[in-house]
Length: 103
Image 1 (cartoon, rainbow, N blue to C red):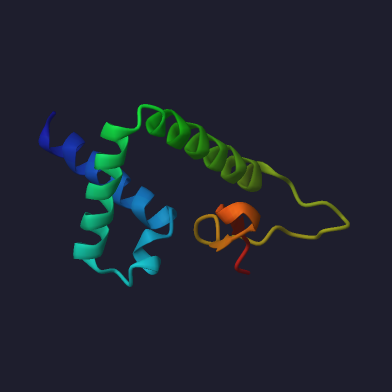
Image 2: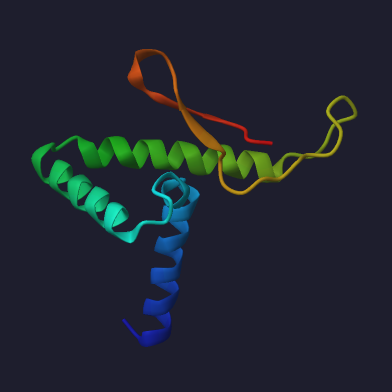
């Protein structure tokens, strides 16, 4: 991979960390982020289904985001408000997390 391509790739990966809310969640602590990523890698090695589950969740989140930016404003709702990322992740029933709008 050439230097310029590698730089762009790394910037895009950093954007995903930001988009997932991990920078704010960890108060931008690099050691915490790295530790979390090490745990994710270990879980993926142990659990053969983890990668496929994460892939489905990521695709759904990208689809939701694409729908928000592609939607046109209606007369009832007015102009769409844009916010950074998908919003805040809050626990919901069953111990899972749901994304809620922060604006």
